[in-house]
Image 1 (cartoon, one colour):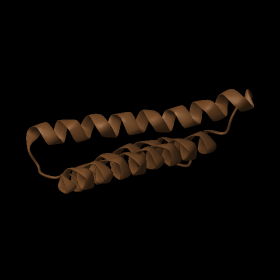
Image 2 (cartoon, one colour):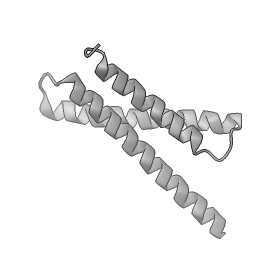
Image 3 (cartoon, one colour):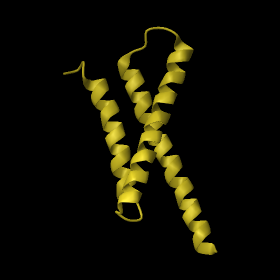
Image 4 (cartoon, one colour):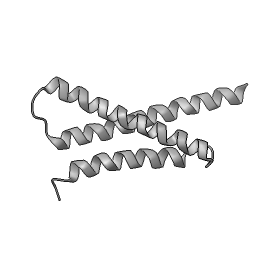
Length: 96
């Protein structure tokens, strides 16, 4: 079971990002859900990019747990950045 823990962490970060983005969405229309799904996928790719940068710098056999945690941190960070940008855009629209 401990061999699968990094995989579960990566899967959990993707599902947590998707769940959070859907829960904070303005409505539950199909177009919004597809938009949120695509944004969750892009945030997940952001997590992979952070992990890839680490693996590129270390250039050795890296521990899968470290890679999985970096994917989780990158995904959470990308999701938080997206959420902050979205809040600023909504605040600017309400001022107009």
